Image 1: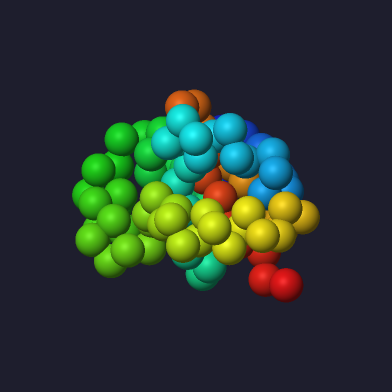
Image 2: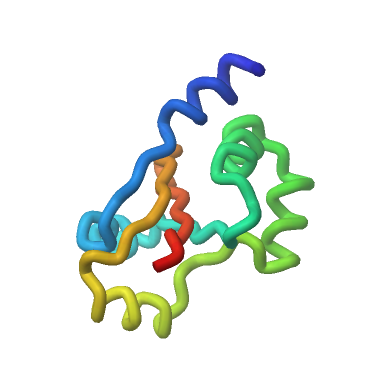
Length: 97
């Protein structure tokens, strides 16, 4: 495992929606679909692997949260997410209820 991958793996954490709101407000949150690894996305972003990143964007596997999603999450401030901070972005993945 590369040093970067090991570092990213150790950095994956959980956060409540309430904690993510300021990052959404500054348009820094990237939503990663379940089934796609936060570490894989973080590694691709950190290593400027634009081909993989563009493919995920095209397939809508990584997106910005929609207004509908934000509204739903605002209704459940205890909603939890897996997170990976990769400045200036915060990668998030919903944790199933």
